[in-house]
Image 1 (tube, one colour):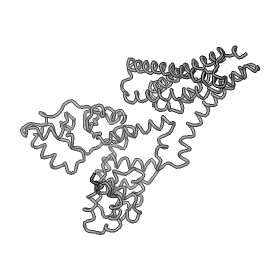
Image 2 (image 1 turned 90 degrees about the vertical axis):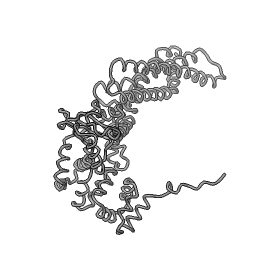
Image 3 (image 1 turned 45 degrees about the horizontal axis):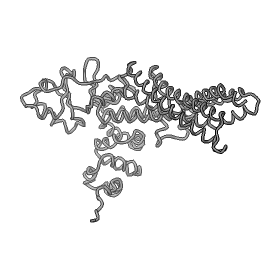
Image 4 (image 1 turned 90 degrees about the horizontal axis):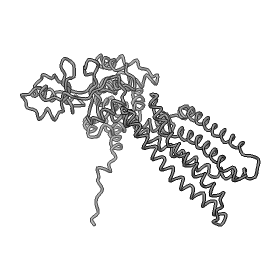
Length: 479
């Protein structure tokens, strides 16, 4: 077989090439042209890895619009570090060219970190006015991330004139896939660029536009709007005020960022972590401890309840050799029951949270009842099968030391242990489904019912059930 040569393009180290450009060729006349051959993301990463002196010199040579495009690919923390190195005039000229939503994110991050934001007064009047429109929206509202970089056309305009306008402004507009038709500043329709291209030149936009479209209000929760846009499968969604005036749009890339951030946050909460714990690059030891300690302290309190329950049951055993043997036998299989109930509860919890996230607007009793019924039945079947498996394991482990002989007391013990794990797993499975549902009904984030929390609660319930059932049915066989 003929040897294949490796793909040279895939083996190129773009970051290394860009760093060489920064270090050795930033004074060349065609420096910017050479940089334009690379993707902005690679240029931005190389910029972050470059020493401050060279980075400052490079940004001083680049057009502000070029630098703004690089800043928009960086995290806020990285952008802030670079901005703090630059003279105010250079930093302002770059921020002035950034997309309004990206500039807003940067300014709000500066404010949250209590950094100096006085240089915002040096921005152009147009940029200050744009920022002022969005500044009052909270981080959770869709208005804080909407974009104003789109093409708006009068509904009465002819297709021919609309094509001319699109051609004229497309170079300075990031999003042109969907055009927005307005009448007296009110959004009356949408039109895909492809639909405009294939329309007859003599037609008007009103003749070819889509009059039915999904939209959102700027005060709506951004996760809700992002999932609505995901359901409709569009590449953007218009954001309108109460009069129907077009304020901005939610673009597809921002929607993906929102969904990704929500999933990361839910993952962290499922593990009992805060959002700060997931920021591994910026998290400090103190912030990690501060974020995790309250939650762990609460779980420690619940665990103490389990210890208290175990202490109370220890006192329920009479002072007799047989009772001591029963207590020792129960302790052997206690870890098995606690582990299995915690695992079962966590599985049910994950399924219910996924159901609630995927169906945020479908909380009708019929839908929820059907999902709970499915979880309950699957939990019962799992508990029954695992109970039967437990019966076999207990019989085998008790019979081996006795030469594979089983007496009636051992059979009763195995039956009660299997029954106890059946009840414990069924209840843990139900708790895992009910707790996040209750959270959602009370308007709390269901992800707060995290894995460690449900595991601790399931342990407490399973421990109580296990010892209660065992004392009721087994104690007389050991006395």
